[in-house]
Image (tube, rainbow, N blue to C red; front, side, top):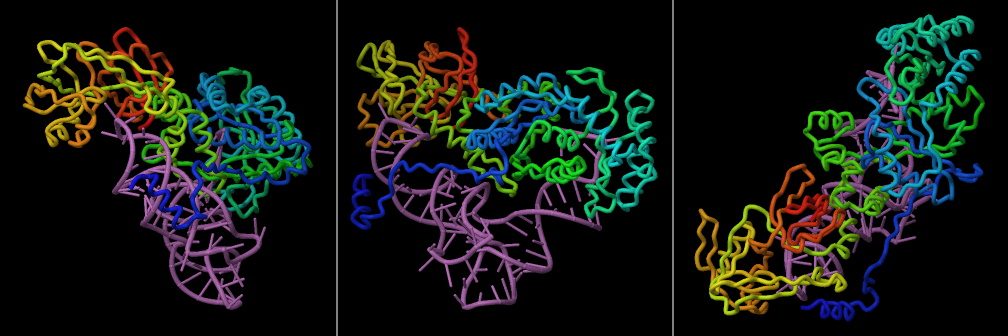
Amino acid sequence: MSSEEQKKLLEKLSPLEVPKAGKKEEKKLPPLPNVERWRKVVMRLAPFPSGPLHIGNARMAVLNDEYVKMYSGKLLLVYDDTIGSEEKRIVPEAYEMIKEGLNWLGVKYHKTIYKSDRLPIFYKYCEELLKRGHAYVCLCDAEEWRTKYKITGIPCPHRSQSVEENLEHWDKMLDGTYGEGEAVVRIKSGMDLEDPALRDHVIMRISEREHPRVGMKYRVWPLLEFSWAIDDHLLGITHILRGKDLIKEDRMEQIIWKFFGWPIREFVHYGKISFKGAVLSKSKARMLIERKILRGWDDPRTWSLQSLAKRGIRPEALREYLLSLGLSLTDVEFDPSSLYAYNRRLIDPEAPRYFFVREPYVLLKVHGIPDSTISVQLPYHPNVKKFGARTINVRVIGGIAKFVIPMQDIESIMGKGGARLKGLLNFEVVKFVKEKRILISKFQGYDVGFAKSKSYSIIQWVLPDKCIDVEIIMPDGTLVKGVGEYACKHLTVDQVIQFERFGFVRVDRVSEDKILCYYAHD
RNA sequence: GCCCCGGUGGUGUAGCCCGGUCAAGCAUGCGGGCCUCUCGAGCCCGCGACCCGGGUUCAAAUCCCGGCCGGGGCACCA
């Protein structure tokens, strides 16, 4: 039954329930809470510059961007570049790579702020807390404090120091009297809190590591929850969108705002996004790049935005995919095939088709061709006429023409006793010399109908004396080699094309004798 | 050990707050068919889920309790 007949039958059966083709389903985000309480929605992106943005970070960026658009609000890019830890280090190039990623994604931010420029502000407010008796300088050893005080809920001796004592210790933190690990400022969130994770958390600590932007200018650094408690207020953030792993930070921020008498902001959370198989954390990626196991930050195995761009994934596709995940608190698994489906929809109508034969090859000799040359025109796209066609002239010498075809097809060719070279001719197998990978065959005509009647495979082919080497970097980092048809010579960098029966690729480098591509998907 | 939070087909999501219209929608995936000189696109058909057990109710995916499973926090990381 043809599709037309099927449709008619369906109409006959249920005339009212014919599904409309091309129905569009727009994914809608739930509204932000309490928008009416604020004059204007202000949100922020808070990347830690340890590497380029990956899919998880992109989710955060896209969600913020969508909400800001939805409410005509403002979005601030705030580099959360406090000193970090030994394992979590700032990568200087990351500042730029993050911007690059955001631009690629089409995320508009209205202002850029660096946490590392704001140390004096944090000092000021920390001092204020000390003065008001809401914080204290703790000289306990970290491990001791954890076991002896945090778990038991018993206050440590430093908690009862006077304001004067605390300020004195604070000065000694700043002037270098105390070294790394010797003193911290703790907020008096409460030792009696039910959740041990919240008890008198550290808000300031000493780090003598060099910072890529401000060098050795500061030795006392704030911790995430403190710096955000201050900045979310000072920068006028109204809605804080964060992963559910940071829910504890909500509580800490609220405690600090209460001490200052500042209004509470709105929080929105979403679940964790995880990857099948190996998770590539940025610190791990950095290590693998240093050891030359990865090709760089744009290696497809990092799943960085840069790497997706390199593969020819469209930002719109990624955005659509990320929005399809919604805002649920459930942890989700990243599903590449879903992303590819969105992307395929976008690139399929725009990607010209080319012949490509991957290694290993078979040399095909077709005997008995009646013409001395064959000239064919092959359209670049089956559905889009405007792409035009390329002309291929096949030289026939002594009735014989030679082609390169993929070894992959040999089984089906042998099974059917022949095959069709797409757009060209049909042949019948005479002999396959396995060791030499040579297939001897006999010309069987030009008619497609014949090939169909024989249910021949229709395969891509390349002329051995008129082809160009192609290398394709696959998503798993492996390299696929092969040859492309002569028309590939005209390809330009950044073009997304389809190698028929192989997949969509983005052209990354073109030289006289070779083309390098990145594989997008099938 | 202590504290949170989740659990709808292979994957993701809608529905859950305000119980009935949900014998559960959509997307992706998978299987089959049509179409096509690509294993792409398009079209059609199909597969496949409310974690378990109680309770409330005329009625529960939706409310309550318990269990199980999963995630997270308990860093002088973000």
